[in-house]
Structures are given as structure tokens and as C-alpha cells.
Amino acid sequence: MLILLPPSEKKAEFQGPAISVYTGVLYQGLGWASLTKAAKSRGAKSITIISAKYGAISPTTTIRPYKEKIDNRKMGPLVSEKLDQHKAELIIDCRSSTYQVAWRSPIEKTVEIKVYTKVGSVKKTITHMSKKTRGEVVRAVLLSQVAPKNPEQLKQIISESFNCNLIRSGQNTPWILEVYI
Image 1 (cartoon, rainbow, N blue to C red):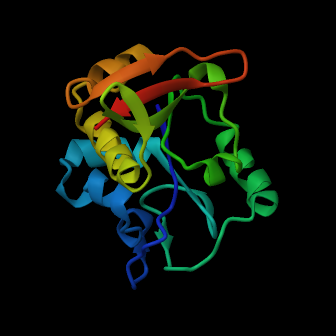
Image 2: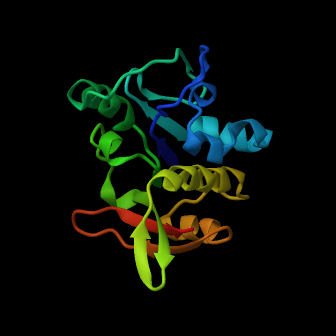
Image 3: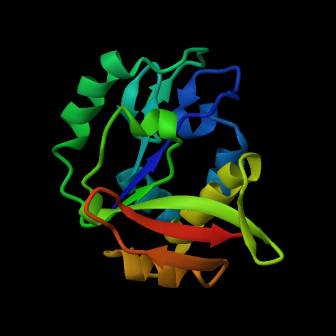
């Protein structure tokens, strides 16, 4: 399993493990500090953060805080070099569209996490709270008894906490897990 996360615009003011330096709402929803030892171990092995400054990094990689926007022409080859070698059966993509440009994951085994709300019967995209929900989705995956190996197993895990809908990958599109809050 490979879990792709974007960085956070909000950062701590100290050097440290990336998972501690990034402090935005996605990382608040993930709640790394309160995870079990086993969940942290799973996260350290499966999470890759796509950083505007450092490229594809582990949550335990020591970084300094920075203010930088991603240059996908510069970072794309560096990120691809690292991630093209990954043999994950399942890729859980929690990146924003800006960071998805840095590396296009294989669509047949990628599940993008999209967050919505319903107003009446109308599905509405939400932005800010979607980051927090993506963090909560990652937390649920890390805390689950079994690591998901396919999109259906991922849906089963996430449906324990959220109403969700799984959409099959298409010819040019990855799987999508719609999470409703």
C-alpha cells in the first residue's frame, strides 16, 4: 500500500520529521501523535509526502520549514524516479490536483479520495474540510486491523466511519472513493 499526501501550507517553526513539521488540517485529521505504535509503523512504511521543496519523502524524513510552491517541471522527475519503483498493490491518493501533476500514479490501482457533502439530494464538493477528512481517512487506514490491498477493501474500512461510494476506474481515470460528510 502506498498513501500519497500533499504537504501542508501551515508548518511548525522547527526542523523535524515531516509528519511533525506539516501542521495543516489534513495532518490534524491524521493525528499522528495519537496513533498507536503499530499504526505509526504502518504509516512510516506506506505514506509518501510530495513536498514542494524536498520531493517524495517519508513522514519520518527530517525537514526544515519552508515557504515554496511546487515546480512540477523540476520536481516531477525526482518524484517519478522514487515512486515509479514502488510495487504497491494499492495507491491511496490524498493529494490535491496541484500535487497530482508531479506524478501520475497507475490508474488501475489508484484510488483518489474525494470529499463531498449532500444538500438535499445534490452532491456538493467541499474544499477546506475535505483536507481534514482525507487525514481522517488515512488515520482509519493506518488503524485498521488489515491493510487494504484493493479498492473494495479500502471502501470497506472507510465505510465503518463514513458514508462512501466507490467508483471504478475508467480508461483514463483512477478509482474514486467518494467520502460524504
